Length: 153
Image (cartoon, rainbow, N blue to C red; front, side, top):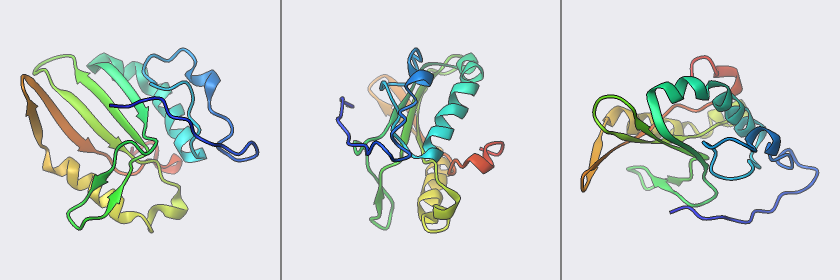
């Protein structure tokens, strides 16, 4: 369960602009602002520009900025909090809800945090579907998003 959370942002930092004008009337973005890094903001802009295509295949699309709510732990006990979690439900075929872990990452940090990307790819490659009562969930991850690799992402 996600809840409203107060965060502190320095007025002169890159996070000060919360992209409120972009997110104001977007039903897919759960909060009213995104006080992320420049790479996280670039991801949200890319997501907004591609939402119409995503909306053709999926319904109940919700992008959530993970503000220290969800932590995932790899097989070595290393934990991290992906910056975003995307929830969406497949429109056609089997009723399946996706939970996607997304981590925008600046190029200067990609090598240092490579284990996180490897873990996200491992989650994706396991291709597991979890049944909870009558609902089916596919928990997956994607490689790091970076503004320079947007086409591949």
